[in-house]
Length: 307
Length: 245
Image (cartoon, rainbow over all chains, first blue to last red):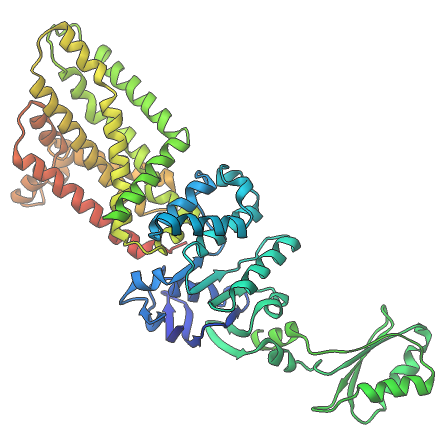
């Protein structure tokens, strides 16, 4: 369990984190969202014990990060932003060093090191110095050090930043695998990532929490929630289709993209318009290339809340 | 204490993983020999002792030790690895002590590698080997003092060049604390007791008394307290500034 109460960090002229309170329970994957400079990294650094809060408290599995920092750190696996490592060390040497600090010994040490090396596919680069590795491998080494001691709590600061799509997929699969029995907090500004791995999203702006909900319910706040989007086979029918759709009583507004020959009809609050639009199209003889129901746009909600 | 050992071993291994260790050892040995034989007049003195070697030791350390200590913390902060280290379950003090001991053990190795000089004087005559051993101890303590100052300077900045310059200046001030160059700064305005206190901080006076073969508890205590003080200052500086960009 992670618990923070009124967590605050002030620098001379700037309040980076301002009274942040939340709790995360086992099995939850919390996505920490926010624009750059919103206070995501500062909050995570306070949880990890790297920065001391100005006021407020935080605890990891019951260990207060100020009163019992070693207990809190022992329960935690942490990937700092940018995944810094000791570049002159070999991968094997580095993971061995972390295993020593984490007090892994004997058979358990071999088993855990073997597990993370397999899981993150580091076998081939074990004897290379970390400086010679690609960005994707370095990130994987950083992740390996965070999970080598099988901690109950994982805090990962932008775990997929700078990775290619395949590597991103791998890291998300890893997070989903571990999600069942761990508490995981990740920060990101990639919204698709929240939908891919998080069971809960906290949006933070200017140091304060401005939204805390499931990704689906956040997306439902979008004005595109339950909107119907359709693409015409013949772009010449665009103007006629627009007028007809806009005349439907449950439609609040129609947006048009001339380039794509696409109409998007936004419903009035709570209304469902898919059937009405589909029936209208067939009655009026508009031939459709596609027709779909939107669940809502997280990026639009994000912009609306944080801008 | 176990963490101190783990961190010290990692640090020592990283010296040897880069050319740093070999370049440092080579330059230290070449310069130490050059000072001894050319500037110290090792043969011309006609005496079977190592005074010519130990006499130049402080001046050699003045530039070489800050070059070794400048990376201790500045590099950790610059690369961000300090965040990785400080979020492992270790005390800040464990890390400060571990990294310092690694640097000290490394300079002790450099010092030990000057053993051919000791063999030479024993071949040429009958030196006082007890006094030579004491001088080696004094030299190691002097290196420890310089390293602790350098560690503190390195904790103040993330720029290694600045850490080097601060280190040289601070070591120079401590080296010459008993001499007019430093004392004149205090004379004229400070009470005599302060001037005397500053003079008693001089590395050179404490080192030279040990180098003569006289191991005085006060000299040992002086180095122990000085090292302790600067390592504590390193810890405080890091605690305040470790996350600063």
